[in-house]
Amino acid sequence: MTDIADVEVIAPNFKQRLSGVTSTIIQLVPVQNRLGQKVATLGPGLPNSLPRIGYADLLRLWKRPRNGHKRVWHARRNNEMLAGLVLRDLLRMPLKILFTSASQRRHTRWTKALIARVDAVVATSARTAAYLDVENSVVMHGIDTARFFPPADKAAAKQAVGLDPERKIAGCFGRVRRQKGTDLFVDTMIALLPGRPDWIAIVAGRATASHAAFETELRERVAKAGLSDRILFVGEHTNINDWYRALDLFVAPQRWEGFGLTPLEAMATAVPVVATDVGAFRELIVTGERETGVVIPADDLAAMTTAAGAFMDDPARLSAAGARALAHVTEKFSIEREARRLGEIYASLAQ
Image 1: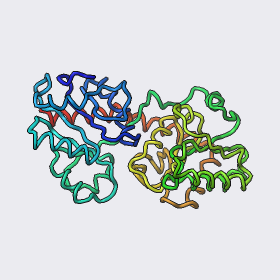
Image 2: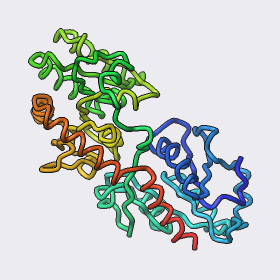
Image 3: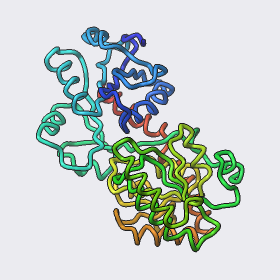
């Protein structure tokens, strides 16, 4: 446990099950502390390696941290906002409450009421900010460019994950379910691969029990097309960065997304992206003359097939877009950049 006297920012996580928000906390907090921000987590579902405080430490929040400023309570869910408001307003603890909103839909009255009482709001994208009725700052997520980076040897990277080094590889990573558009990717590859013998495709991710039948149906569809040896379901992997390094093209086929880090992870590995216009994808990907990828309408199989096929048939375009993607993410979407921007907000609130 971290000494509460040294904690200047509390990042609560009031959800046991792994989620995108939990993943954000797990990745961000170590970087924040490395940059000198004294952030500790609170709650279940987090690795013991993170700085953390216990619920008993909340009784010590009447006393300010060693620097004499107010602490920042950085909430990312409604129940975390509510807890911060109870501590600040009912128990009169010296806290400032920051809320990060990733929602791309109109908030309920309850959520609006909570947001109206916090001290500052962060939106994870311009699209998210458009759904807020209060002043906010846009701080987009970043990724760990020390983890996601291009391979020195693409063929060796493919061999490292058991794939054919002679083949080009298109990939789709994430939970296997309809919301994620896995079926759109599979149908796109069923349409494209027969005429492109130098390409294969992989689906990396798992289907939870409620989506197992969906995955089974997709596998049957692939088998019926005679492509079981070229459209591979490789399951979930903790070393997903190694699988990105094996790719030549990444497809993000989601029908809905809150933010979506997979295009950034792919681009950081110098892999161009075909992505649907959901989440923050349009704000992450550069299209046009300096393209790092292509953004297409959501749930549009024909557009996905056309866009992916155009990249697959143009090696020079594929290579150039990949190089620009790497430079783009390195400059604008490192996790250190996200952490520094949040640090500026913390400092402004605390003082």
